[in-house]
Length: 626
Image (tube, rainbow, N blue to C red; front, side):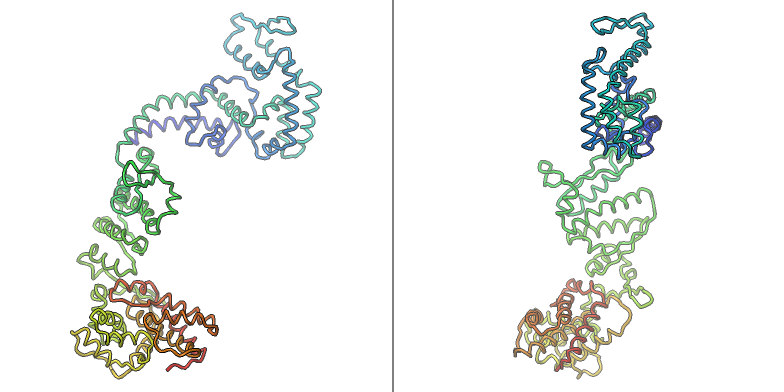
């Protein structure tokens, strides 16, 4: 179909190019001639050929014209148009036309509706059609006398004499001279020369829109032969093109497949459809996509893309962006093109209901032998889902953690246990100080679920600064863990008499000294706990200067933060640090590993900086911790 369409369209296009070249020469325009031509008739460029069809009769009926040999920019230059539209020029032109019309009405040859332009057209038609050669004559009624004209030359002479008599009228010339005085500017010199040589043009300036069209009609009439070649080629090929286009409407396209994939898989409050499918097939243009709201065909109505963009959620916008991505992928499939796709944090680009639709589509890509994928993410849930649904038997060997060091980034294979269940991994490796501290968070949740209030309170005393926080030892933690976890015996760690608070601070300081940045969840939890403890200690010390209060109850950090913001003796930089801690570290770290994702979003450097900042303000204000 496309080849057949191209052959027909190529023949038309070839002749059209010749016509456009001729128009450029006649109008003396080098650029955007089709656009300028179409705008003169209030049409867009895409309607160029249909516009030529509309004016076919007018072009072919035009013979001699007062507009001949006038270049387009001799009148329709921006500076000249501005002058013509000026109030002063309009006043003069109005006077000129009034006098001109008066002289025409008094003429012995011309009358209103039959001026020199009309007369010249008649003379040319009679000459070209051999009227006088057939021994016919024309009778002119002048001064109640009938004057017989037997030749074309004689008729032209009579018309020209009368036109010259009118233009030589003293009053008319006086008005013209006033206009001429205003044309001394060098930029208007060409326009002045035109009016001096062709004063009959002046009355036409009252209607620039009509003059604009008439100029183009004149240019085309001077290229009638080529104009008619284009028209005839188009008419002959038009029916064939219609048949091809109709056939194309009934065929499937790559874009239709893309639309079907999108509408079938992604959950958005609209559907998409292709409006110009035939163009996508026979012209290989990008189709126009329309968006529809409504549950069924009766209720569906289209909506503007810009409006749609404003009312969609961020996730729904990202889903809309996928249309282009899917098309690119499907095109590469069809072209049998081997491709490596780099998928960067795609899970965070979409709302939750579309994440699994994305994963299923990625799975299809992964199963195509042409395609390879590198998937980057910091989302635990997405990582494990991709492993299970896409990676298959290679899900452990093909998963890596990026470790950022001062001079390089290395990829380390991520341990299976760490990915599938970090909580279980920590519990199995409590001899590591980071795992020991990080496990406090979910051990406290377990104690709460089990109704073990004593252990829950003890573990809460480690996560929030309370009276006994700095007295709890590693041995105390070991006993609590044995009580909650049941399947652990001995925690192999040195000096169990150490206070857990000291271990938290010591471990956090050790993290500060590490230069590489890896996705290490337990270290982030340790830094978060230490930072919040120091922040609460700072706030308690500042508040104790004004009031005494031991029990702050649930949500201690939030209550302390709210209270301290009302105090007047807290430096602005300290309040700013406390606010960042409130925003960037989680109030409660829950049992469900999915809840750890906000921490994974934060870089180690951000958490390190928070810990440094809270230590700095305590030292700067010389507060004494207990």
